[in-house]
Length: 415
Image (cartoon, rainbow, N blue to C red; front, side, top):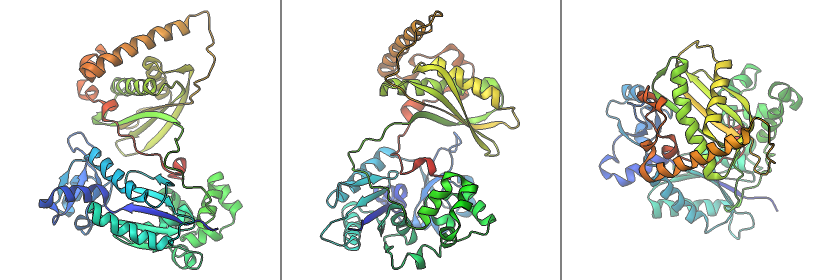
């Protein structure tokens, strides 16, 4: 039996929910965006009216206002969006328990074996969401997840698109290769440079040629473009293994020297260590991400001596990686720290320097600080060094951190 997979995408999700809750702005151009004062001033999503002005997701708000002077910008309300996301999934559960999220607003649903056709289920879900939640969805129907996702993007808003074995060459293959899932702008440009412009041209490209350019990801591109994706839609109760714990931030002003970076790394490192302890995890690999004022981005990794959840060890490693890899060509706009390489069952190796005993004492100290902060607030206990650069240290990544559902093939999101 061939699979029947739906991909359901809530149209302009954040903006749609905001307009639903604020009748006074429904007939106006609306964007959900971050704080311009703290330099998170970009469009997260916009309603259909704002889209007509050519506004794009990720566009700076100041630039968007040049296109649309009457634009209404509202701050994101993630608890509200999570509630609507859960209500939408309650509708999907009436048709299957194989529901896999791809962010708050998108889900794959496997309805294989249902007495109804995938297309009829898609229309039924579309109308129920509109009637019960007051927002619209677009639904793609196919035999695999990649083409189902393509279908939900193909026609918007409030639409159903079926991609089957009879029509995919006419619909999918004639579309630009950048429309394929996980083919980002950089990958599309590289494909274009080799004369590959459509998904059909990608599908017919020699697989050895693709792997010579993209490594193992070349085979993934070839399979995706040919509809050979066989990955299952996960059961909604399946737990994903946590691969890393991290935090990042865009700072209120550019970081211009090592001291600035050390200040921000300290705040981020404390948050990451606290989250590790909450999850009962200890990691050994520290990864830092940097983005400068010209939006140049790079990532570097380093190893700690042992698996740990102690903030000082994470911070020291992050600073060491930074000093060895960044030469201050440009001021930095944002930085991030993540810890991975978990090994909960690792045997503890004692040494003559007493590092294990020292780590245990630091861990107990930081656990005590966690308790104080939970009771009296994040700023009730701070390192003295954080008082030097309060413009950079006065943020709370632990409490402000929003955990988004892990996506399918997350590591290939930008091949």
